[in-house]
Amino acid sequence: MGTLILNVDLAADVPIYQQIRDQIVEAIAHGALKDGSSLPPTRTLAADFGINFHTANKAYDLLRQEGLIRLSRGTGAVVTAPAANPLPADWTGRVRTLLAEAVARGASAPEVLEACRTVLDSFNPKQQEGTP
Image (cartoon, rainbow, N blue to C red):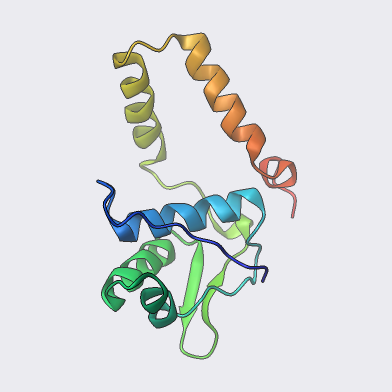
């Protein structure tokens, strides 16, 4: 694995475990983490950020529940293949809420679509096409 750089804002409104989870998902989407990439042990992650071990463990457990990583005593946390990760059932609901927030804050449909395109284009093109 290349160096995984996570940035955690201890003062943010977003819980720390969610920040860690979200950044790992983005690293997978960008192609920085690929199938078989190892993640740091939860104890190391917790020590690096000066956070509780259970906070780091919660982030990994979410990723495991979502099928994005597998956890085992022998190999630790490892990224799973994209093909093994179907979209969760609540995915469109989460997108709907984010889009509603943008509209409620005055964004026009073209602005929202352009923001979506920009974000999608920032991810690894091979990942978007579904090829490894």
